[in-house]
Image 1 (cartoon, rainbow, N blue to C red):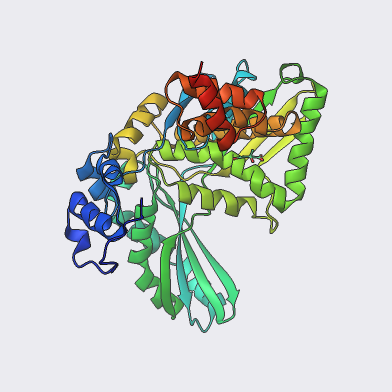
Image 2 (tube, rainbow, N blue to C red):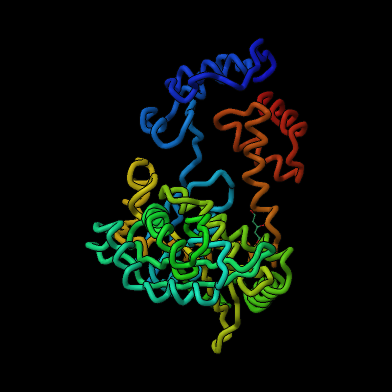
Length: 427
Ligand code: MEV
């Protein structure tokens, strides 16, 4: 695609941001020597209105379509739910369906700790940090009024300032005075709301601290916005005691070892990020929060736990920060996000967070079960084989035929796929 790169290879393109997506695309095509197929592909923005895409981010030239699958079998707090998941990774949706099929009778129970977001205001060069902390805490009523005045709509919806915290942080350049504004952001993810409050309050905080304020920004470690889900899988339904004990052992491995915990939690985020993305929420915010929470003890560990309960069944739980919203960002304006929220039938951010936590647990259960038994390659290979078949040129019914033969021969490789395709075509 990039073989015939253009003559003018300068990345300094005057007024690039002011151009239309098509004009930008032509400039990029000339720069990179894109062929017509690539240009036509990027120009086709699928089901996202180019005018909307151009408003969502800067310098738009195209869109990146990711499949949206739906996880079935989920029963959450007694209610059946269909869960849209946007992901490019095979097996992720199937994993949730499989986990939920095996505990459909009892399903998942969920809860949240609240909708509280934290904004941080960093004050430096404070001569008397301990006293400064108290000077700020004494202004609680004033701070509450100023925060609430920033967002009367939020207050009318039952949200607004809830709490104040001032922490002293030892750093190489002295003790910093870090003020936390704790705000109930209701059905918004809340970044805009709390950032506005932090910026508004910063000059006053600098004055009370008698120092200088630098950063004024939310914390993605949203540990006052935890979502929780727990579930029981009956030992008889998951293949017996050996499978159950293998899953517990897999969890204990992740709990004890950050190398394993990173992969364990990555699997959890396969499910979580897919729902976060499908609903137009901020995947990076949720991922940052999840991993920071996993390291809250000072050692990175598992976001889930597994135990054998009094009945001898597998009892599993997950708890993590889930800062997601139903308003703001892409959630309200992206048509796929809106449709995903309609499929979920959620009317509060809290319910969305609870569903997402349950999906994370389901995802993790399936991964651990596969890893503790057959391994994940068997399931992955069937789907991978289809990709390889397509890459080798298979079309229509040929894709399944070639993929099946590749799996049967336990040889999912491009060179083998090309030979198999010839055999299939030769009859
Ligand atoms: C792959 O995307 C996710 C897994 O590695 C998760 C895990 O190991 O628990 C299968």
